[in-house]
Image (cartoon, rainbow, N blue to C red):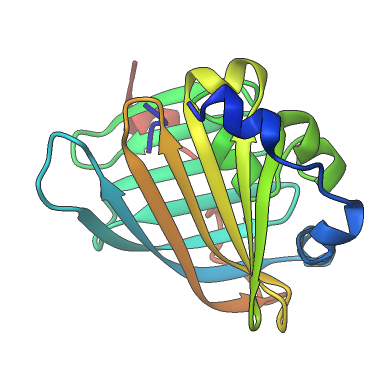
Length: 211
């Protein structure tokens, strides 16, 4: 789960976008903040420059928007990311190893922003962390291309978010890392405001070797 340039000319020539251009993204973020719980299936496709084939994994995401989440990839789970409201835990289930990260750690920040957590979870907060380079509408799909600012540029080259304007739900996120690795996450069949598995946001420290 670890998060391991766009040219100056393109950024300089990109026209400024009006607030109305980002209405679908603003609406999706505002709606998500109103949900009590979300449970959604995910598929992640990772392309690494050194590998000839993409790595594709399915998984699941459970969250209480703005409070906590548990993100698992693989069946049975191979990797887990948990945010308990204070720290992000990145867990490798096979070797039972883990890393604890603060919310401002550059490994954790993209995942938190992607899921709508932290100070940058609102559209205004996101625009303090990213520059919008372009938007595209195609039927019910609204796509936003983002370029990171500040320290986040050390980890990311770009991020793309795709919103379904009919459901106002996030359908796809892609980020490209500094090393050329790209990660595409797709979200399917969201279940809203239903009870989540007990203890899903709890990490037992004694169960892992911490790095």
